[in-house]
Length: 630
Image 1 (cartoon, rainbow, N blue to C red):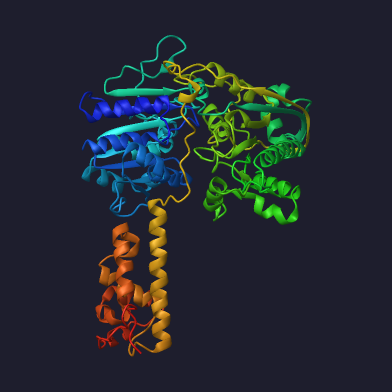
Image 2: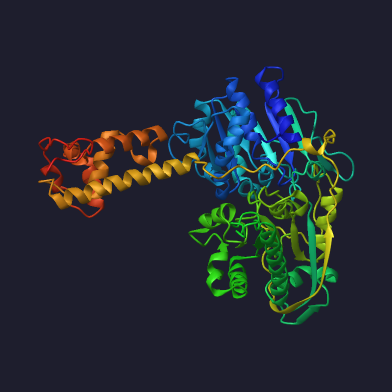
């Protein structure tokens, strides 16, 4: 069985104390360095509280849709189900009735809650919920009535989630950073009153009813929970036309000064970006070649592809991302290009499938994205990241580099694994690196920004009115980031044999609830369609239309519920009913159904034929088949 890391052990202790009524704590804050293993915390706390009868259900809110499946997998992992002795299952829910569908909870997103806040609030008022909020730093505190009206738009997610926090029986709040780039307080967190001239806002570690658990980079590295990061900083020149169409240039990104923003914008879209892409691609390819050689068995059989390493490319915008993809594919053999390099951007309908394949399969080995695949992406195979983006806020960059710091159980010994981040050598990225090394991340400055600070925020920065001309890479230097300060007390000393192993949910053979639901719905649809074709070919229905829509309507009347609203057990019951019965024997159920008549008109069929149905004579089925005897 896998061992718990220090912060997971602490959360388990807090949950046990709550379950035994030994404390009045109902809010647990877990400040865990990105990649340190937050996904197990809702499982630990939910299992303990549900076993004690303090909660009925669990709701886990994540910042983006691509993380919902990972949340399901955390509860479906058979290793942890056995280790923690739980049988809890969560489903990735849409904004529909009964989000749990007979299970013990559901996973949703910030956007979904904001779209239907009353639906989720009613669910919380009907049941006692443990509410787990992932990446809480995305939610700014709700402004008071005297604040500017623009704050309402910025806090739309916060305003919809706040009633759920107030109604929950217990709360687990998780984040990789406890400060926002804009300096605003984070929703629901307990703060001390800012003191002094600098007005530093700090978390109140002694707030009543709260338990605060920390897990710093230093602790994670000491327990070998994450990999040390090697930064490859690439310097270069840039030339562009400014808004007045005057030629501007810098001979080094690292010395661009007040021109950093324009120089970086130019570099990411011209020759510099291509040179940096080539270096990241070359390094990842060499790493994969070494891993493949090391994984070749004595009989000559090569490794199947797991644990070789992968490259994640973070682009500044979708158009540039497509250009990056074309460049990368141009360096690959023609037969492999489309298979090995993929793109995941919001414009693509298959973006979620591409991200899932990148996480779970040996191929693709290169993924180009903008923002979909940077935060919370659990892909331990990532060994290289090309951070070709202008964003320089600390929370965003911490999440970006953490994509490569996860330990891959298939990639050999810990010491042989790599986490390499390629980035432009600008002063803002260097400042970010210094902050990671010297700041703890539990405090934020309450201040107004100055012009020379050049904050590159995703949500407020517009593209500069310049025309990029050219750029070139001139130098590349590597540096390993220091572990940084501890968050709270350091973990107790452990022998190497006692250190926790890498935590990665086993994907092989795991069936998460949403995948099972999808499979059952597909199977039911296939059987319904097969019966339609059989009845048409054999002329088994003398009167009335024979169509997929008609048979679906009959099945809905027989089951008293649509497939989209059925629980897992109800879907299994519907499948069993179809295996024993013919839908054509029950056409009389919709003979005078006004809802079916209306839906038929919507689909272009006349409603007059509906009344022609009469209850057909019962046919004797052949034994064991459910089909009429010939």
